[in-house]
Length: 180
Image (cartoon, rainbow, N blue to C red):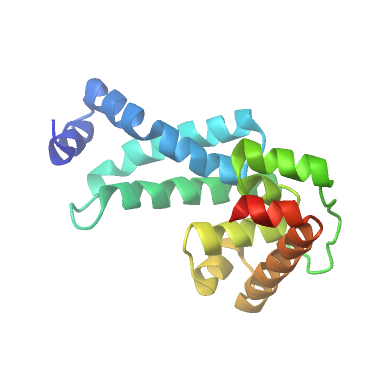
């Protein structure tokens, strides 16, 4: 079954097609959810909610553009909605309440799952803006609209995230070589 047939079958509420679609993309979108939630259970819950939203709105897909990109956008929006609902993030430029990992801890984390782990040491607001801008490719205007902040706040949070990441990397020269 090609992608277009799969989509049409999902529009017709074909449970086998829905299962195929889920199985095809669940790992990819679970990785997206884990970027926003360190709690695995919460990431799984948002994944399920995101797929439910995809299935509820699949008839709105116009077959123009990339289907995976369309679903990705829904999944990211579901993550943002969950963050807003739980008020997990807060954007405060003065929030320096993070701890830089020790040399051994940071090196070990990089070996285990690359630089994404370093993001968990950032304040939540910085991590969120960094993820949306650098990883998801959102523009500052989109980030501001989605989070209810100004573009300036988005830019300052991104700069703060970059500064903190540089501090963590400069704390250990081994980290830099592991990233190269």
